[in-house]
Figure 1 (cartoon, one colour):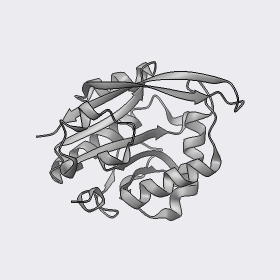
Figure 2 (cartoon, helix red, strand yellow):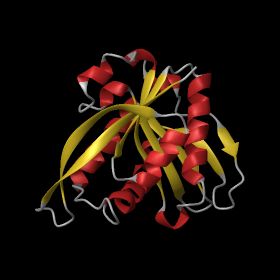
Figure 3 (cartoon, helix red, strand yellow):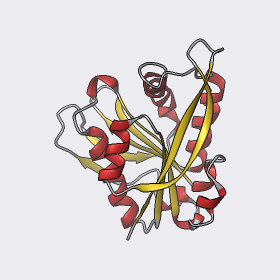
Figure 4 (cartoon, helix red, strand yellow):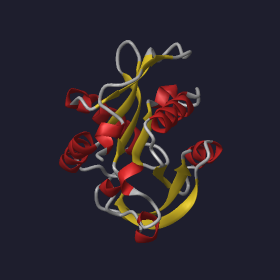
Length: 196
């Protein structure tokens, strides 16, 4: 079973109680990739986790996510304000073997990214986005959800742990700083939530 069939490109549209967000919805419409790319660049090229992002590799990465999975989007009247990108667990080539072996790949999903526009952070939007996604995953009979997060991203770790995710594995990733030359290492944690 392909995850894009389990969590379809068209699905729930839900009005929520945040003045900035009009609705959350699933999509695999590639027309929104440029907006997702802007959100991604804002999330990963500034601040604590700032790193070099190669535009061509990012384009390919986003295309592949939309080919195999999709996006759960929070949209304001003028732009995408929040986005959760998901794909089959096999999408993540770096996922440790010991974790892969404990998960049914036919009924699991990998959250590749969860991003909120910087000016809207701290308002509970990520929590609402994640909880809505998990509710829909239960409805679609997904058995496990896996996410990878930087070990120093305490805000995200707290959100995931409060949402029932538990430690499953870890890796070290080599990255480049924004200058495109200076290497650094990020410890990434894999967190897993079993759905019932």
